[in-house]
Length: 97
Image (cartoon, rainbow, N blue to C red):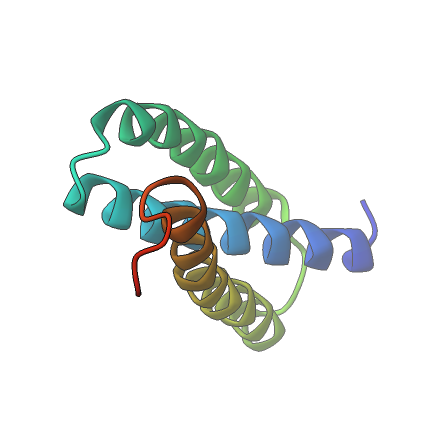
């Protein structure tokens, strides 16, 4: 696998791992237990992808950490905005959020 493709894999897996962890935190805080169950399985898959990308990466440490950190930072940010949208759309119709 090329270093460019490895970087995409690291970024994407870090993004989804942190996105899903943040999303699950919000879901379970609001007692959306069935959704939390499903998202937990997705977290397992995202973590597997991240571990696989770490084990197979030939990217140097500093670029790896920067790519991974950017993916995770964007992941948690998107999780916050996604949950805000999801909650308004499906659970708080008409309520001020």
